[in-house]
Amino acid sequence: MPHDAAAPKVVAVDAQPDAAGPPRKVYVHGAGRCGECHEKMYDEWETSAHARAASSTLYKAAVANAGDATCDRCHAPLEGIGPKDHLASEGVTCDVCHTLREPRPGPGGADFRLAVDDMVKFGPRCDLKDHYFHRMGCSPEHKEAAVCGSCHWWEPKGIPVFTEYKDWRDGPSAKANEPCQSCHMPDEKAMIATGSPVRTGVPHHGLIGLAGDLRKRALSLEVAVRDEGGALQVSVSVRNVNAGHSVPAGLPERRVVVKVRIKDASGTELATETRQLGRVLVDATGTEVPFWRATKVGSDTRIAPGATWTDAFVFGPPAGGTVEVDVVYRGVSDPVAKLLAVADVEEMLMSSARVPFGPPTAAGRAKVPKTIITKPPPAGKRPRSQGLP
Image (cartoon, rainbow, N blue to C red; front, side, top):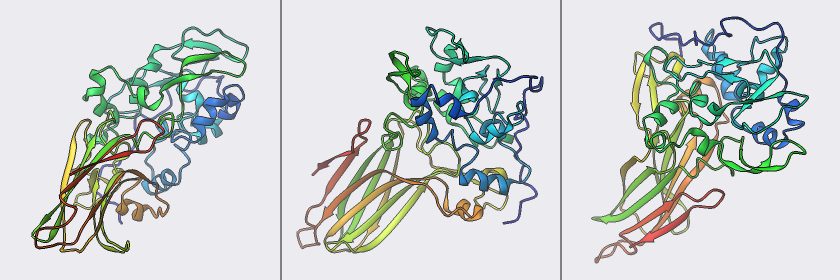
């Protein structure tokens, strides 16, 4: 697809090294070095999106397509800092978050400072003593959403790209004093470093919950099936019950896909319909494009905190079988995946429901009307469904 000449060039102009330039000597290390003492945190971080921020297949494809646009300030914050430039490939690594100071969330994005010119590593605890490898920096700010918001809010030229912080700020979680860390870095009992005592209130570093299941716990699903003159009407409601920001979050190209399938008694698929929820950015022709080519928002069907998305699907007239509804997270929309030539797109089942129905009769269709509600599970447990007549 040719680049639209009218589209804004999305370059993070505020994503430059700190104004004073890199210091003569910097105190940064690879994550593996930190992991020698902080093994638990390293193991959790290693599989996180932060660890893949500068190396994922999708990010590399996006950078290649975007030309001279740069997102290094947030995706590779150590780029150009000191002699250890190779650390930038580790993305949002230990020495990014633990030297981060003065975060100022705003639509301009990436407004923070990295204090890499000293041996201090900052964190939310103020009861720890210095040791030979680095000194301990007391930073209550590390418990505040602003630490996350300095990168997770960016609206270049007024186009909303990352708005998780803004969504949170304007939503019920902020009013309840529940910062991002409440869900993304929940506290647990653990050793902070090898040989240290077990302490309470140690943040998990995997970023998607203790059991890696924040997406599975974000939404509830209600499916109501009834007969309408022999046809089958399926009403689907998806509610954002746990996320403190709109769902899907992150890249505007992410989607929540609602798949409704009709299967007969043998399991053969008879019909299927899908809806894709998310923020769709478009170019001047109205064609969906990645954010660096976009000129405006084409549509926005994300589900805000506490809000519900509802739609109806009509099939028929089928014989007896099952209605299957799956709510699936998809890492990038089909048009953008095709444009970037990304074939391996992440998918995750967020919620599902199964509703059996009988064949139509003179007295009406057997087994319906029926409603199934699938509630999100507690951390680490499967969803539970409750059938209602």
